[in-house]
Length: 127
Image (tube, rainbow, N blue to C red; front, side, top):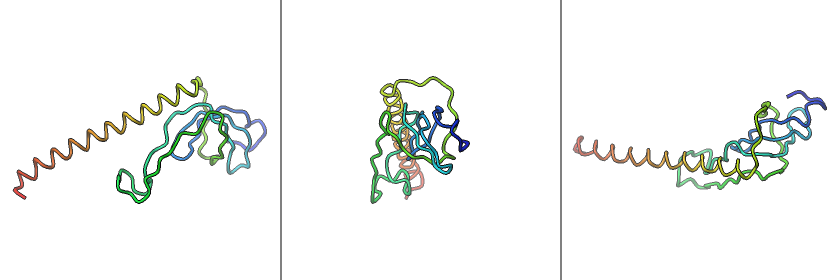
């Protein structure tokens, strides 16, 4: 994103703390851009990012989505133009949360299938 006054007030897609948002640019110093959150595209990831998928990580983080109209600084490189429709914040939050829950449910079912298959293999291996 260019570091000029005309870059301000643009609607963008911004990545922030493992979440992704539709936001409006407010100000920039070139390296970072202050954006105001308008909608949630992807809910932030839960857990310890240094130990992904480890339920026993020393610090299991709960990450909330940024609030409607919350202003956050993001790396300018983490911003892309956005020209789609802007859904209402509450609706976008609900859809993003449901998508994350479905992703976790699918991962849980995958892990259960892995455990089942590995137990079958253990019997086949006689170990």
